[in-house]
Length: 301
Figure 1: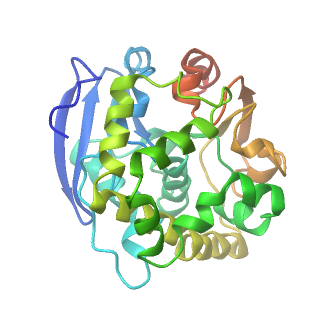
Figure 2: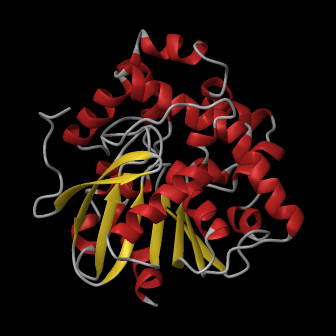
């Protein structure tokens, strides 16, 4: 993937060694630190439409999560722990400490938002503020899974199947699977919202067997150990101590089922949020609306 376009001109590139392996990141901007975490099936480049504006007020750290993009793909482990949101969150804390940031704000989309709220629960005091984009908590997804939700998020159960079933099924036609899936989650039901240069990153990654396997491991962890961690926190009454802001697309994934704000109440007592005119990929479908919704919240601290 070395011939792909640079979508963050003026940003530095770093590798940071962590217990999860080497993490690749882009860094730029000035001001309070803000960690941006991508989701499936993407990488750090999903933030390219909002990075320049956010960098006016924040020092941005934009990594690839373990197993995604240019970051190392950990060995899977018997219990999928290396791909748990707990392990990924710990790696992000290592990254931020290495860069000199003991505490910081975080905005995450999709799987990155799950890493974000797990980081807030496991490492109280690290997060000044948290923005979660187009998700509800993992325990809500699984415990409220009905026919409509299962059809909408078919990939949750498909990717979580034992290896090598999803790897084989997707691996024969990775570009088709990625393009069809991403288009189906947008408001327009097509790929017009995505920069062709960003799509090149996403297509290159899913065509790589180790990246595809890592994505499946991410979802296997989501169906097992991540759910167990959420359930343990709920049973213990643990909640996020930081102010939390939820943004979701009016045609996004959380719009079906329980209200997104109601879904977050048990974990995030200091919660606010709103919908924007978008599908699932808020940062690429509606970058200006996202900045208008989340920017003031991130700068309030």
